[in-house]
Image 1 (cartoon, rainbow, N blue to C red):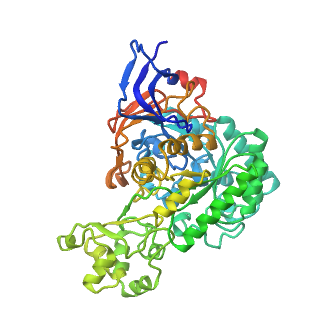
Image 2 (cartoon, rainbow, N blue to C red):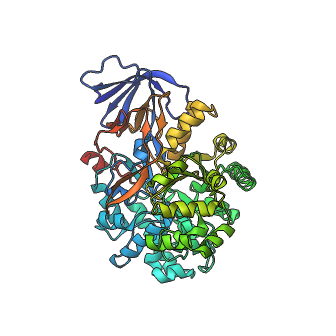
Length: 578
């Protein structure tokens, strides 16, 4: 048998929970054609995997790379951390279908709800589409180092069918509008979409009420997104489309609202569903929510309903500046991302503003408290003494309230100070509970979103280096099943997620002892002369996507062998073109 590439003498962890074994893998035309001992490699390229783990590439189910694909073929940070396939169109947010008249407003929404700079979106999006099928055609044309599997975001469908103002009003769609919503989903799935997603954190029909997600999850104008005020009847219309087709997947962010609706939607659609997202917080509330949810998931599985949760198993630090920060809710009115820098500085110096902030909670949602936040880097010589210290430590040294510490440092540093905090109040106990549940898919990278502070595309690297290698919470075999095969099964990937003959050759070859990730840093590499936070992985000797090496020794090879996975696979014409 002739091969294009042979991976020799690796420790194979196949992703199917089978015991690890030492062997070879032969690849031809992007597909694994032989697993075992390959004595004669012929003219094939040979990758020596002696002493290295060979495993399926990670599958990242929750990303917002819908725009980033137009400027970053590696979809970093995910592409630097063993991820070979991503899912886009999450949370109901996206850019298709989209009339020319609503493009500007759609970009404004993503600027607020997913913290993607408006200047970047304007500079990068080609807008060579109107319909959803045209959007997939557009993505097909751009170079990709990773595979992309698309979901249909609900918000553009609602806006297309009802009009922007009516979709935001919370009005129940008419029968004709529901028919059009269903037709648009059919059209999108005919073109290659694999299901639908929505954020439903508000109250149906009540745009005047706040969302459960707080200010970080609202629209550009401060109102809920259309899907937040969507009615259960509309979700049932969308679920019936999947039932009619006998295919598809549903990803929902709904908080703890209406658990009985989840059971109804899972039964009605027959599709796997993903609950987003389950944090590993250690306080009483976080622990109580997590344990309730894990029991609830187990009960649904016993009924034969395929409902899973996305678990927040990663804990990389968040770095941020007050140039952009939206996760301390009380601060958004006075120093949030929608204000210009001069106004922020003026507000932070105002005694009345500080009094208001001192009276506000010191901890918000799942983000670590203000006193626990560290000063990572300063740009004024007088402030260097505070680098590495918690705000609470500086407050104790100076006799100031933590709010005044933050305000004084930010003002003196002209908004340039880089702070470091933690996301989701993560505890090892909480992570272990998520890892122990067979119904939790690890990691929620949010890749492509919250670019000014989030670098969670490293979740796979962290899962293996921290929770397998360091803390021995699970086995390597179980970890790779959870990071690749389980998400592939749930989300509709047809031919990848495990290493087996006949599967697509999406493969990572890594140094188990050397696997690690870097501390986040700011880089200015976005279109529109914007910056973002990112980190990198180390220990990845090779990453192969559809049989081609896209990463070698942690560095990109600039080989773009990724594909748009329409209906979960490479269609014949796409494979031929590649």
